[in-house]
Image 1 (cartoon, rainbow, N blue to C red):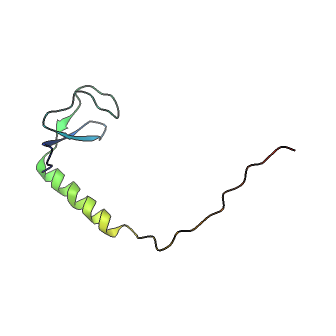
Image 2 (image 1 turned 90 degrees about the vertical axis):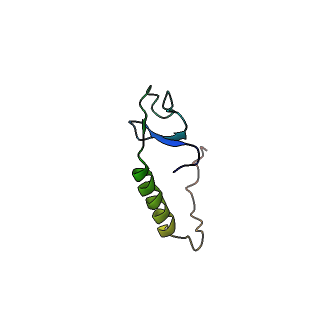
Image 3 (image 1 turned 180 degrees about the vertical axis):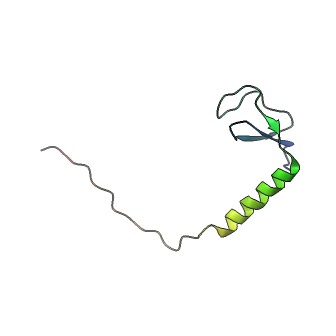
Length: 74
């Protein structure tokens, strides 16, 4: 369970944490479109986030790609 209270999800998919449901979505600006997310879904998403973090490839070295230069008028 999140420390900040409850997790609230908008109909557009945006999630916010807090004690009370937000009045307006800061992503799609819908009014009163949030519903409280069940704890089971929160646990699943936390597990998915951990799996993604563990399986994310590590960059072994940086590659410097040349960017095309600006064309100048003569």
